[in-house]
Length: 423
Image (cartoon, rainbow, N blue to C red):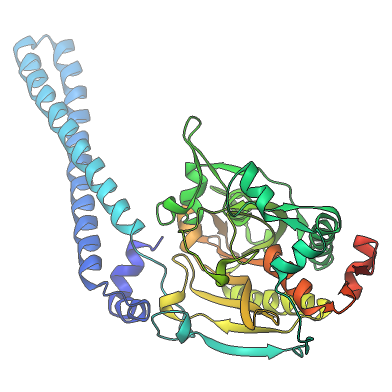
């Protein structure tokens, strides 16, 4: 969530930056500043009224002690009027605060200066490309056909149990899935990330804290009876571990990793681009989260990008990195790099990771601060990334490692899964 004082001080620059997202925020910023002025003026009136009421209350006591009953009763009437006025002002203040909060919740994060202008994924910038795309045989299959051929994933059984988008992994498919999770976690903990096991449901405050609510409310599964939400990513519970905390600057950075299933109610769409593992309602993902000093967050972002690169190099999958344009940038992000693996059998790129810096946007919602060396309380910067999302990594492995005799297992995964080939 943006800070009102920053909007006031940087309005023109913010309007220009948000134009990269295709948003004209000038009028909205004016409403924010007007509502904040109303809030501040109402607060001042309320404080003044309460101060007068307190002074009169003391005078009433003195008058009664002095036996000046008539004057005391007159002051009591005045005090009653001030109390009623205070109540009205408090209601007005509460309304102004609520209106201001609602306006701020509609504003996305300010894009970093490196974010290119653009309207959609076609305007994203490729900043890195690595790995050789294998040449497959003429009869190469997409992953959903390979999964069926080798009895690795049963999509129809998932439909029977739950519905479309909830696959059932079987045999070596389940073992390979478990191997990837263990490998990703080991890579992350070896890089200094502390592993967490977190709840898979969160309360409304956690959803608001990391910005999924109210922006993505329609995409989240809601457990109405308990007013809880199934998590769309481990980012939500892991980052909310620190909600409301005041950290010492010596505690930074804080680095976390965790594996969770993820649940997303995707809009209904059809075609080959959403077949198989390409788009799911439930999938597994290993996440990395960092709580950083503002002066070091972009250095940390670069480090996270290099970390994901190393994983993909060890898996020997061809991949590229995109810097997302304003129109494709997530609501809470200031700068995002997407990793995509090349699916040879589908002849297309598949997103497998987003690595983002949210700067103070989430921290302001979370009320997550640190006491700097100068003794001042400041908002931290929060970052997160997928390391990695499993479905499309698995799809890339099945397709890129297929041979006429079966599917080879990436060398780095063999100690985790216990077999070298599927077939």
